[in-house]
Length: 588
Ligand code: AMP
Image (cartoon, rainbow, N blue to C red; front, side, top):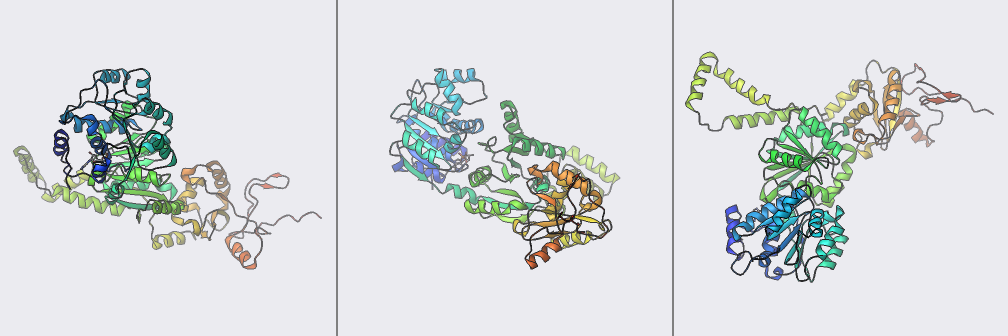
């Protein structure tokens, strides 16, 4: 399918750009029934929606000959939620309208307002901006909306989510009655419907399948890991894919800071984008990604809105998105405009159910796999190295001479090995992630019946098989929470709803103390409730068979307190695991 009849200047701009066929949403807004009407369009990022609204308001901006109408004030206004998105939109509209003589002015928070005022005064055909800054210019009289013919609300749902309703209403109220209102939104919650009712007339609804087309270009994977191995998994995913550009999403700016530091420490060229960065830092970060000085970007959801990097082929959800929409928005940073992309979710074991339901909700089929381990990464490295080094090459005479001198001193094999080493030296080391195989788990369990575990205390935690409890992720969590090493954890018994494990009595105090201090440290499993078990698991089983009540006369040891004040430490006992604690007979 080709673009329908378009003004020559716009058609030229598209051809120059190499866009010879409209995307679904572009075709839809150019249909006869959409011409001149208000529109409510649900279209995802990556669907070509910017060019879509750019083409949609052509009739309002250009005259019959396809040139920009001479006007004293802007003919079209685009409002977008973030600086990056606004700048991205303005770049797109600039190449689209420049051949027709159009001028685009931007008004975005964090940029120089006086410069923006001068640009507005110089006469702009199209103004693109963020709600707050546009309102400022409007209130100060720098933005004249009296001649406006079309207004676009881009990512309207996001703008409302971010609390821009008042700004939007103030701007819309300042536009002339007869203007067209085009509302673009990935989702259509009630406040969007209300906005549409208030500011649109007889709007045509367009829901293209381009969102799904977008998904078709993205392969989804989910890797399950222990909550304490999330960053290691992120490192290994970066190393496994070696994407040209990758983006790693975190839920908070603190996590962005931490992961950014971790990756830098390991030698990755990464930048960070979060609310704590100034506009100039953000610009520098994006520029580093564009000119490939950096290949990874660690970002929060809001900070990454509007990023459009054609080379971005890998999205890693380091922390799981809060809902299906965020999942789609984040993932939509890749697989853009027909390119292939991969989106990987790092899922802590206890969250698997939640993620499965989110994926179902978004109708996404993800492949559940293990985090790539060292061997898999090294095998990939070898493949990539061979491919890179076996490409045809052009060699200058000076380099040939150098090669001859090397060959006189070393064998070809040595030289080739040195070349491989030099390439490999640039690659950060993979991290250790626990293997997800029955053998590895059996070996791990066997290792636990060893000296030092003659006298132990049983603890329990409030998750079991139903919550995907598994030694693979429980072990590292216990180490983080209890400040002990794996070697200090004995047998682990996983029941349907809870899990018991042994800690040598000698370190149990220290363990319990660290547990108290790390409760609430969500990142390291601080939301799990871990406590001294009043009984050993076999007693639990026996009780279950007898139908008894928990804790009757089968205590391990009092946690810290006995009658008469706090009792320090775990009473010494020689009878091995789960030594019953004799309760004091009740008086009377
Ligand atoms: P958007 O959904 O507006 O963020 O656009 C995603 C990307 O698709 C941008 O890089 C656009 O330049 C590109 N694009 C827009 N229209 C087309 C088209 N008809 N063919 C190919 N790429 C396009």
